[in-house]
Length: 357
Image (cartoon, rainbow, N blue to C red; front, top):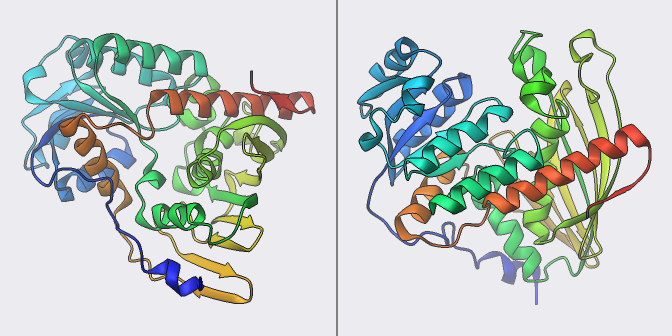
């Protein structure tokens, strides 16, 4: 079959089961990502709306809520934990420092609310598992916010791989870097604090993109890791990974070789190489994508209209909540990623390969 014959067969939202209904969301943590990206994305979504904002003070939460047409309440963290305005929302979106995901998820679960949590799931796999257990015990959905899982171009690349366009996958090469201190100049920010971020600053925060996207594209799980990492800039003195390189072995026999940096030119890519061709996603992870497919001596750059990746994520989460359909990036998926990340840091510190138990 020709390459062109594979390229026409794709449905953008083949996960969607409902076209109406509304999930009311309480957004927890009003940093720049929530205010500038998440809340506008919810506003543009088909299936959800922001009704409650939650922050360190009720004053800040009410100030943000006042700028959101559908928001009816602004709560402090203490007020949220006390269950105030619990009848005003159906689900929570948690976008706090990693080590604070668990307490908000526990409270939401106790209140019977679905949980959509930013990645990584928590600051450690142990705390991530505690989140999974809390949601399971309460019988509420737990979705980890891997927006690449709902990115149409990535989903199309996954289908092409499954259809055998590149033959049998052999290995992947990925990179994700940014100049974090240009985005957020404060050297005391939480991403540089191991007590809030977890074991490091780079693999945990942005290295997770090539790791998890590769898992999704190959539909495989990690079994071992090797790594090198170093920090030389003063701002990164508390973390081991201003820059990192790592290799992951997957259970299907494929490998990922990846690099990530929080102090470099912003660039993203992921290349999946198979026995008959390759798929190159470049740019890959910074809110836009482009895909080039090569099979033999034929290459095609796919027409990939850009979407709001966060809107896709919120609509996916709402669709799962409304229909009780199986969740792709669920809590256990997020815990395995955190176990892999911990193995990468252990490998970087020890200088040896680390096998996941």
